[in-house]
Image 1 (cartoon, rainbow, N blue to C red):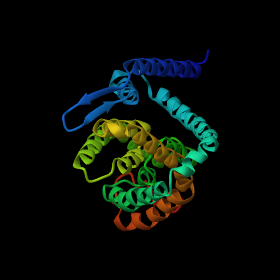
Image 2 (image 1 turned 60 degrees about the vertical axis):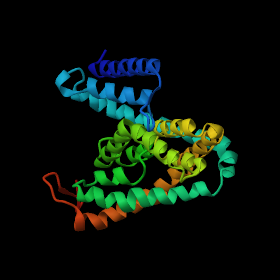
Image 3 (image 1 turned 90 degrees about the vertical axis):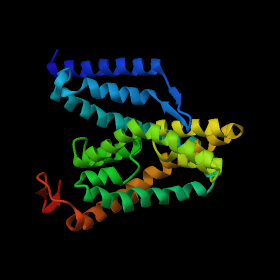
Length: 276
């Protein structure tokens, strides 16, 4: 048995153990008075995986991590295939959700690209800023970046960094934000439910869980409209990212980076263009 195959088996067994352990723990909710913090198995798995792969522990070597990176790209490809297979049966539900859900995509583009890209460049990011700001960096968006640029590209690092931050801190933030906004009485619970689908599945579940506690009479509507908004982002948002958001971000990066981008030691020239 070759060493490379041993590394692959080792990674698969490790992932299986982490998934089984975190699913056994399950979702935990903590009531802190002003809101409910929901902790999900994905969060546990991410933290445990980060601890295990810490270089000082020497449990996983760099070549193991490179193998894991290759597996990650394949996993995202399978995920996108699954997502595409789920589109057809859900189209009637999607059309019945209303035009208001479509407006969310405009807000996502404005928030992540128009506002996020200049901030990322001012902070010193280079091509990482493309992956970090072209979308909300949900699972399908990561798959798009990995497929187009590769799992080891600066764009993929930027997208994965935002995704990890969203998984670690996003669920807690969304729980508290939904609780505060819901308790304010300013917004309708349905509008808050639609806004709860702004991030990954764990973030949406955290936000809708908090809203269900505040609006128990609207639990079913909250679940439906948050799910419809999530579905809209997964289906329509994927094509918007491929044909609009990503090309737009690349063009804006090429225009803004020479103007406001910070020079650093990692800057170099690739193909006649400045990049990270």
